[in-house]
Length: 401
Ligand code: HEC
Ligand code: HEC
Ligand code: HEC
Ligand code: HEC
Image 1 (cartoon, helix red, strand yellow):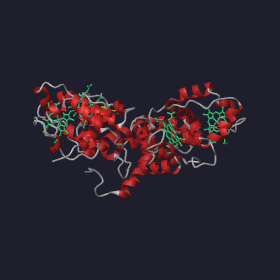
Image 2 (tube, rainbow, N blue to C red):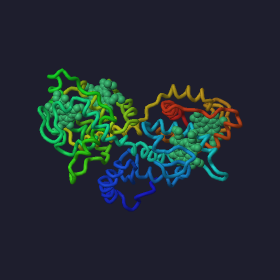
Image 3 (cartoon, protein in one colour):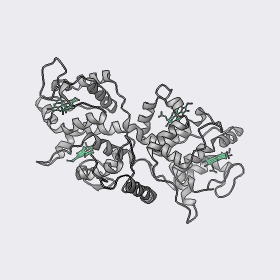
Image 4 (cartoon, rainbow, N blue to C red):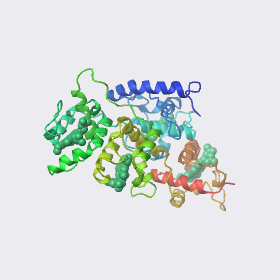
């Protein structure tokens, strides 16, 4: 159920996407205000443009601000979404149902979202935080002065050992800086080792601060740095092509689902820092498939890391059964062979295909469920993000009548 783009599907939305990416997002990041996002993410990635529209359409903005503008009763949606993955956002919404219901005026209802709408909305909240903190040029300059970078590099011209840091404007975006460091790692690592220096401890903040500082040095009229988010679908192909699956496949050391769930909660700069951080562990060979990556490859890969986790199901049905018992869901939703409660029996619930189905169903019924919990003197069930995934696995595993 999409609310936008019915007539103007692929072609013109993609054009609009390119334009908005080139202009809107660059300016948006600079001002730290998300512009209108029109990225079309095909397949099972959320449609973040639709998600953005839903915040208005569904009335979330009546109570919640979106970086300043909007209601004041609930917290600012973009601020609370920072550093959180999809499962955490769904659990937050659920856990705060009593407060949300209390904020409703008489006759008002909590907005109902379909599973698809919920996916898009959560995808948007994930996505606007893609670039993370905008960084600070002053902090970046100070960091550069403290680190040994300038022992080898000069800013404007070739340094004693390394190339100029500002040979291109690439380094003026965190994604470009990560790309350069990734591609030049073997040579830089060798130069560091000769001097007995370790590889650096990268962080998202360090990368954004450094790129912000380098951006402030760029001569007027330089081409704009790449700030637009990449395409997660393309990023999934880069991930496979360059062999990340060797170790992050389902049976690898850093298993795939767990990796994506963690990286889903991070900004692109933070994921870039994680990538750079484990370069010594994954090998510096210049000949392997890992490099060179184009800046677009890197942007796509980082978008994939940021967004793919919105789709990772995971969850453990047995652990879900325990959550179901602990939260006394069974008081009102009977399992087979038990006396029916005041909610629907589990075997009469609609079929459930992914965690968004469960979250959407629960939220749609939240108001009546809240009344029922008050009648039955059951406290409002608080659910951790991993428990929501477990509940999904449990409810999906139960037979239907
Ligand atoms: C009638 C007002 C109202 C509406 C409408 C509303 N909310 Fe809320 N929301 C609140 C209040 C109040 C809180 C709880 C604030 C608190 O506990 O500090 C809250 C909490 C939340 C939280 C958890 C915040 C946290 O601290 O972790 C999320 C996420 C959230 N709302 C999302 C939404 C979304 C998405 C929509 C639209 C589908 C929506 N809300 C609609 C009032 C509302
Ligand atoms: C020990 C010397 C040394 C230090 C210290 C060093 N680098 Fe480098 N760096 C190099 C060398 C050598 C290369 C080029 C490698 C090659 O050509 O393969 C390089 C390449 C780079 C590049 C790619 C440049 C391009 O042309 O795109 C960037 C960006 C970079 N370094 C940033 C940094 C930063 C930031 C620091 C500090 C945190 C740093 N370097 C510290 C030696 C160093
Ligand atoms: C040789 C095996 C190997 C390869 C190849 C590899 N990784 Fe990793 N990666 C690991 C291990 C092991 C960890 C966990 C180590 C740690 O936490 O320090 C990790 C950690 C990470 C992390 C962050 C830590 C987390 O789990 O939260 C990210 C992001 C990541 N890898 C992405 C990638 C991507 C993208 C590629 C492809 C370019 C890749 N990795 C290739 C082994 C590998
Ligand atoms: C005190 C009673 C009560 C408790 C406890 C309770 N529910 Fe409900 N639940 C209800 C009622 C009543 C409805 C139907 C509300 C409506 O029709 O709007 C409902 C609806 C639902 C639905 C939608 C089902 C459908 O067929 O559309 C799901 C899913 C659900 N609950 C899951 C849970 C889970 C999971 C728990 C435990 C975390 C839980 N409920 C705890 C009373 C309860």
